[in-house]
Image 1 (cartoon, rainbow, N blue to C red):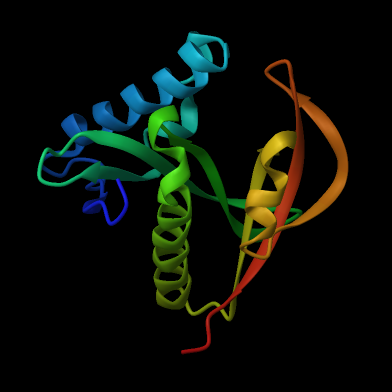
Image 2 (image 1 turned 60 degrees about the vertical axis):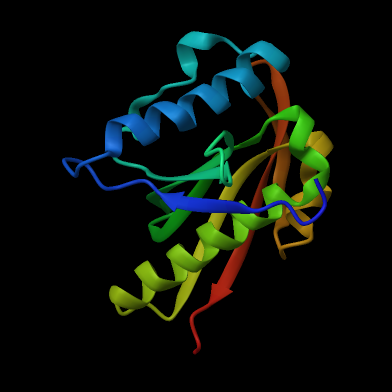
Length: 167
């Protein structure tokens, strides 16, 4: 798998052609990882923010096999605009090939572009990290904030990073 060829597709926005099919591929990866593998409830996997979220899908080339996904939701944290990184999932057989890193980089690039287009100077990104993967997010500059908390029956930690928008 070393040197595997892949693509990251930014799923089209609401109402654009191809959105539903690509989003279904994102959902399939998430169901495999979060429900089948990790045992989280299926009924909570597709939630209210999912419709308006920005989704990214990682597929192997040339097969177009979907193996990873991540989403971003523009929100606010204590009245400050921010983005929430969520639903980062890579199929178990593909986790040692840095695909999660590639998805985070793609999401951060989109966040920086979106924030600049809004005239912002800094982009705050938050995520609810499962405790065993806090170190993964720390490699991208995310720092823990507050106490650990329960989400869907599993311990999580709020992790935050501020992305520079300087060119």
